[in-house]
Length: 100
Image (cartoon, rainbow, N blue to C red; front, side, top):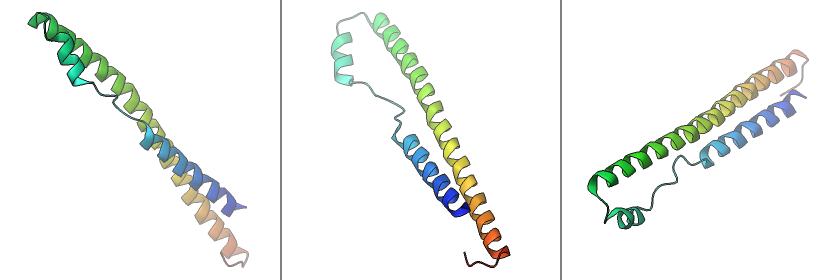
């Protein structure tokens, strides 16, 4: 029974790690579109809008990075659980005389 639980915990660790890897931290900007849009504006207005955009992207990426870190923590906890279950299963099997 512990061996099955170990496999489930390892599978959940792998799945949560994959989710963390797949989450993107930045959607990026289409720089050519930005340049074309602000080419004819006053330089001060352009600087202000660019700074506002930079702040917006930073805040969005900060939230995405926090989600990514959360999924990595979940993955590490499942790995720790899988290791603990594996050790417990092997100790139990050894104690009752089974070969693991």
